[in-house]
Image 1 (tube, one colour):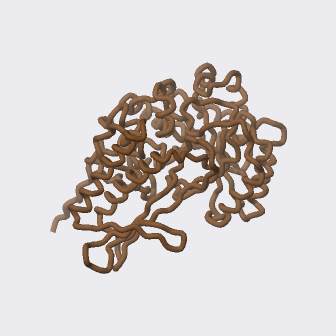
Image 2 (cartoon, rainbow, N blue to C red):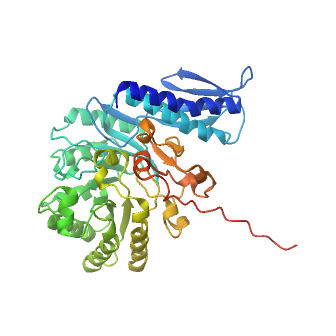
Image 3 (tube, rainbow, N blue to C red):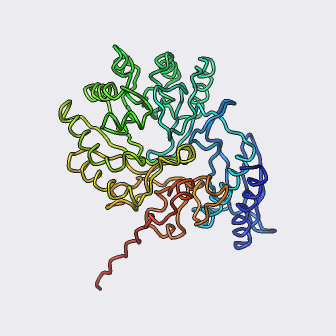
Length: 434
């Protein structure tokens, strides 16, 4: 997209913001104070202002190119001049302002490689450290721009200093990549995080190298007791094709097996649903259930099924698949999970399926509200609007799970539209007899 096209689309994205301000009779004014910035919303000539929209920087970065999923900013709303929640129209302000700011950010071409990321998802706010951008696989829809260059240890130490200031060290710190197990610095980095007060860690991995002698035991001693394992197919030929690898399938299964055997470890198997594997989801669940039964029948093995995210759709559109096609197989897979006693991770995050696809939305919805500042309610996905944030149907505002869902990536909507979203109607209150 040319700079002229991006500028034109940014101007068009400003339209909903201007219309909302005019409709509500509001004014907007930017502010910056004590290293923070935001926007104050009020009424002309009246005090106090109604509310603030505060801009939080949600990712720290180094000056190298990346397609990382983490947004460079996050907007949140704070009511002023009285108690209570901000007005409902403030949510519309967040999404309109967020889309405009993100389009301007894209116009500058300021893509950055996020080593430390903050994510809002099913478990609240969490922090993630990418210790490397190298990987032993080449999944075409991966949201990270991979690189063979090692990140200097001094740079990672600075990132840990940042985390120690901003993160709650009682929470689980996620270590990711690339593939973190290919990084010779991995154990040193985790030990350094422990010196800064972190005690619990999750490792995002494909598990291929977890069978290296002594590696899993060393990770567990350092507090890495949670494992989020990418495993996109139980069929070897399909696994090789999806991961862009050759001959790694047996090692991946062996790595999964090692974690299942380890005491005090929690494991979540994540399958990114795509055009090649969606029909295989029920059989994949049967494979995982059989693996657990053979290795450790009482061990908890959680299943998480995720969408290709916005960056993945841009990088590999041929791997995208319509939710109308996915939904029947997704429902069957969840039914197999229930039958086999495999818990399913809640659908609440940037790569989650909308719960209106599922037979029992309440069972799978996020336990808490999710940020909606990158969500737009629109049917227009042309130009830059089709590459920015997440979208929902305007009718989704009436869904009882609206605040627990972030819709679908705009890049998905640009390809397939939103016909697959069928928000359930709110439950009617029961009438009581006098």
